[in-house]
Length: 447
Image (cartoon, rainbow, N blue to C red; front, side):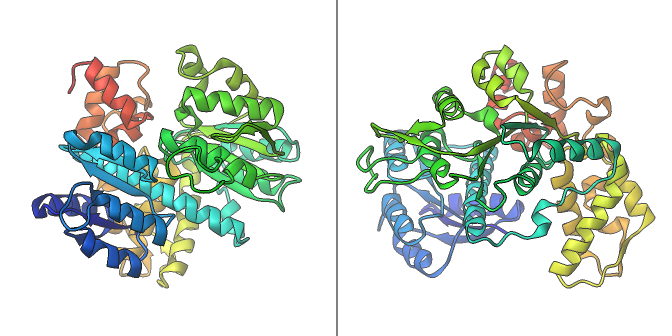
């Protein structure tokens, strides 16, 4: 459970934010100003800090400064009004992760916090990997269907070859797990594997995170910093959601792939590295190239070896095996005496369309293990949306289409209806970012 500190002097706004976050499963701590928040940051470790910029008795900038000193890996999201947007942008230069402008849509808040929490998870994971605490479970890709068997064969063929690999698949299909497996079976296995979610890092920070920066290159750059490419030297770097990369980042990545070198932010000398690059995207990258959203030359460099991970709805034979795999994982973690899954529960799992793929199935089994009181997972312990069946929970799924390729307007309307207007969830089901969804809503007059 992610822990969020909410710092807001307006008690009604603070209460609203808490209610929104707790409904999504976050653990929320409240503070009415910076003076109250700073001692809590000293005493507790938060995954995300959400703070108003303008407050009496220590403002958001003081909260940010305290967080950067005491908890440098915790992303800080600023809440600002229209009149202080420039100040919020300035706060990002000082190390804030992102900002939200009042008044905001609940979905925008939830999406931003989710990205920040994912960023914190990645940082923690990188630290754990650096300490060499990986387990065999990190590399398991469960399934015996024909599609998965063919995928594993391809992984076995490409892993020993020191070449770039492009992994394509919907969100939650296991792209990072395949990347880890490739690294483990490669000659670089004893070196670092560093995963980076390009969709979780703000555009203003991602180049500095990947390539590092020189002292004084921008406000707040008080010392020279090594980037993730440098940190991954002789190992493997995994760039997830690369379809979100900005044009300037795409140019830098192309140079790394072509020349094995890059320039730090503010640097004047190239830095050479020996890194295997594995990338992943949750969109059709070839189509992005056709529509001018992704560089053709970079796509050709990345697409030397391409692996496609099928969505869970296209490999239903694997669902019982995956469900039992996750049961074994979570009954051990929670010390529960649950030994099996009932036939009725398996049938319900097999019929559901799984818009969130394997990740959603894992969350479902974790939920069932937590609430089940018997020695067997029964249908009644599954989440309500699973029991409602696909035609009720995701009414457009029976078409087999989850991307905006046929009738964008109809699909968007059905997705929003299926998720009660929650744009972040609708965007995930449609296979697009929430930014893209907002743009299409405006274009199609669906706002």
